[in-house]
Amino acid sequence: MRFVHLMLVAAFLVSVAVSQEVQLSVNFVVGGSATRIVSGKVSGEWHGPTPLSPTKPVTFTFDLSVRAQSLITVVNVTPEGDGVVVIQNQGAEVKGTAGDQLFELVVTPEGDVKFLWGALSFDSTKLPEADRKKLQKLVTLSPSLTISPKGKIKEFQLPEEVKKVVPELDVQFVNAIVTATLQTLLPAPLPEKPVKVGQSWELQIPVLAFETAEPLTLPITCTLAEVRGDEAVIRVSAEAKGDANLTLRRWSEKDPKVTILNGSLLARGEVLFLLSFGVPQRSEWKISAEAEGSVTLPEKDASPVPFRFRLSAEIREHLVF
Image (cartoon, rainbow, N blue to C red; front, side):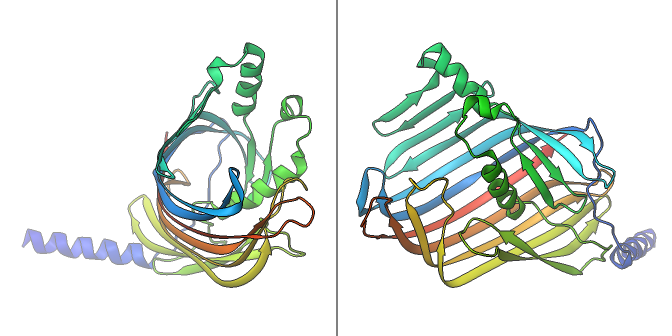
């Protein structure tokens, strides 16, 4: 009989949780910090021009594991509740194979960089001390993000010190592009109003990676799938595909012109949101993408070289408080 009572109580609590509305908002606290760890695998294939073969397509596959760690600290909260967050590099590594060659890229928390790919290699610890310190300063720069309580990236800002290291860098352009890019990579845009389990909300995220008169948008659908005590589970999906004639934004006129004629993107994710902390604490993602197009060198009368590209990734991220 006791078992029956327990089952009835459990069923009642579940029904209450399902019927209740949940407010999903990020709660920023000045001085609050956490370590963000991103890990996963990325694989795919590229058939097209490369820096070593700029006018003739070549094919190479890649199969890489990735891991990156950073310290996130809230340094300010605006009157509107937006959080200003500073990100400090704590190291990253990419290891695996690319083009049937061993590939390894390691960035240390101190800002040293080691790179190995077949016969190519680089080790910043072997540079002249002045050059090594310049690279360390660049790698360890701590950018800031301004994020709304609903997860909108309002501003990415490189620190002013970057101009001392790279005077020719167009900081305003970089800030705008990274702001838009990070918004599409956000764990889960949050709803403006409280939602119940099973309810969904949709958003159109601007994509500013292309040279268009007006920004394109990426449709994203989020669903509050479950509430388990202090944990809200949000499922996220995004899909885009079709013919196109889009040119990627270039850093300068010296860069090649990359035109995408058709492509597809499919992303599925699950985010665990801690209600008491007001923060997305863990997420898992599966992403696949394909594209076809051409690459045209900046030289006069250069002919476009066709390319095909496919990618699949499984990414995990979590915050450690």
